[in-house]
Image (cartoon, rainbow, N blue to C red):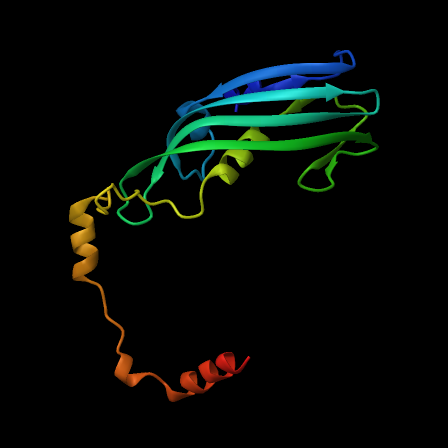
Length: 176
C-alpha cells in the first residue's frame, strides 16, 4: 500500500480556510485492492477541504471513465463515472466512523488517508446494471457470439403448468 501513500492529506499544519487537493487514479490504484471489479480506468479526483478549528469538511468530485465487465456478454465495457460526496471530520477522544458522512478522528491524528474513500466513492459511482448500450437501430453492442450462446440456452417458461394459487394471489392485487 505504499502507492496509496500519495493519497494522505496532512491536515495538522494547515491554516483554517479552503484547501484543494488533486489526484489522478489509474490501474495501479485499482490493482491495489484485491476484490475489484474495475479492470481499467482513469479518474480525476478533486477534493475541496474547508478547515475550521474544531472540524473540517471534504468535498469529493470524481470524473473519468472505468472499464468493467458487461453483465450480459462479459466483454469489457467502458463506463463514464461522475460522483460527488461530502465527508465531515470532527475530533474526539477516539477514531471512529459515526456514519457514512461523518468521521471522528482522535485529537492525536495529524493526517488522513483518503484512498479508501476514493475507492468506495468510485464503486458507488458505478451503475447497478452494466450492459452495452443499444445502437440507433436497436442492436446491442454486446459480443454477438455470447448473445447467440445465451439465446441457445434460454429456457422458455411453461405457462400451461403454472400453480393455480398464483392466479388467486394475482386476483387479490387486482381488487385493490
